[in-house]
Image 1 (cartoon, rainbow, N blue to C red):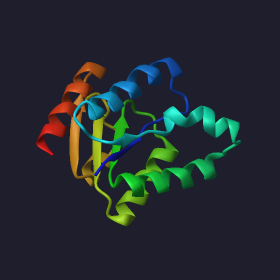
Image 2: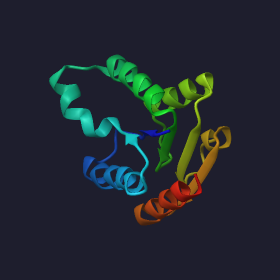
Image 3: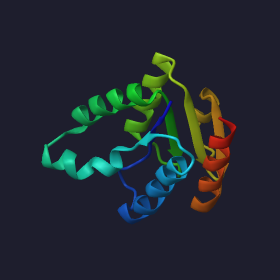
Amino acid sequence: MGYFIAYRHTGVDPKYLSELLPTVRDSFNENGENVYCTFFDEEEFQNKNFGPERIMQHAFLKIEEMGGLFVVIDGPEKSEGQLIEVGYCIAKNIPIIVAKRRSVSNTYVDRMTNKVLEYENIDELSQKIKEFCKES
């Protein structure tokens, strides 16, 4: 099984995402886990004029292909796409793992999932992912 990485995109500094998401991907890959994240296909989506609906359809196919969802909750702001992906997985009984920054308290998504990894910073998130991979 692999994981589709769900993250908040809108309103997040692209430079920060360029640090966060490769770290998440690489932490899984270094431990032999297969992951997919739409962040790395954004240029292709733009070239093909994909709108939100088409990107979500693509996400659903990739979630099914991966078999699991890895949700990164890095701040208190909500993400419509991320919540749709979580709802999709709950409805389809697809395993959900949440990585939540410790300071985030305004969510209950983490209480509806199979496992929660709490972290303070990107380095700790990477370490938690590596530990999770070894447990799996």
